[in-house]
View (cartoon, rainbow, N blue to C red):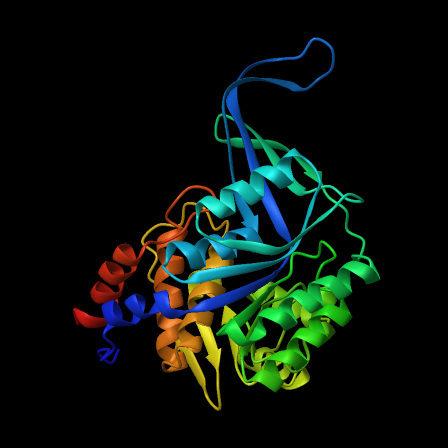
Length: 330
């Protein structure tokens, strides 16, 4: 591997100059954790003796968290319900110095919450509070207007799609058109069922399974993953594509394909790793650094995050230390 010439510390310090819009599905991940010692006499189900509860930001909320904790300004666009969970999420984001004026409170749907019940080290059940219907035409208009009014101040936009109804075809395409007109970068973390919403975006960060599903394939079969990436890039008229491949690392599709191996020492929990990847890759692209270097930084941060429990982030200090070990101390 060629030794990197990038001044990683300097690049990360430059993040504080950036303002990144995060449009998509804002969610809360809740965990109820306890011990299981017996089965209920009422039904054949385990009884969880609850020891602690915790929650973290999920979906687009976690993307905004990643951006904020790395020193840039995150500006949020999406919806929450007019409920306690929505209030809790907005308060948490504001404490992180995240701009929430672009988040609309909608009394017709709940704030999306995923509650995981864990007994010992085993997830026993997940409860989802959500409304998967597309947002109303009026809310579409309001989100588009808020983004249009803010566009001149943004350095880039992330579309964080968790299929909860915010990134409709209209919202997605209007944002992509605005970004092109204003020469702002727009990068997508997609859900395969909505893939045609994102034709013309600058880039996309699917994992291998999502890339296959975006093309209507159930498995890789005789295809090479390079063929899949090239086909997806062409189908959606993307400038670049960053395909994440779990333990196999990443493949960056430019006018050539660059394979970046993974360096995670131990995979503890992959939750939120995709949010970290798109956050770092977008900020690197917004700073106009070489996209291969931006992908390496994103890969380094993802390797840190998967070594932590739950929806985690990587600090600048952790990224600098890990990046130096991987790319400089050779």
